[in-house]
Length: 139
Image 1 (cartoon, rainbow, N blue to C red):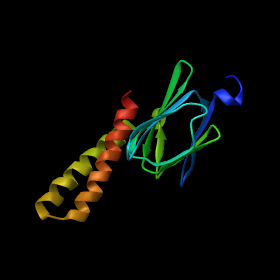
Image 2 (image 1 turned 180 degrees about the vertical axis):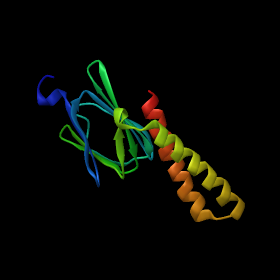
Image 3 (image 1 turned 90 degrees about the horizontal axis):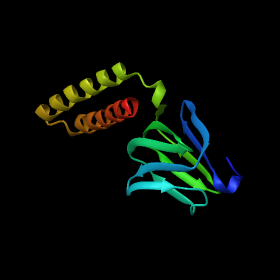
Image 4 (image 1 turned 90 degrees about the vertical axis):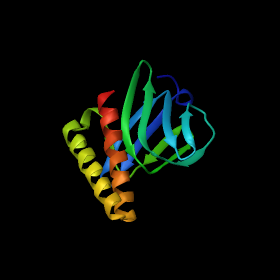
């Protein structure tokens, strides 16, 4: 890549450590306000992230990371995502994610029948996370 003014440094960290650290041309994330694309020299930004994929374009290549919540800070061509959890596309165990999806769906059904709002909310988050992981793995 060219000089530092024309590339982004993208780092994704979780409580378990660094998941991603590369340079790219474009970062695409989904914030609480909608989708956000960041190119080099973008204005500084801080945003809360949805449970969704982060895409980093690097020339002809694109990396996809399943990001489960957290926030993005961007300044000086450095983007840092601090996420509750995150997985690179090639590290996702699809069978495990499918099992998590099935467990979450079963828990949602039971919570709806029992009118348990707290359990329902937790299960819905678990379902979104599992579906996100499955979608990223299958791209």
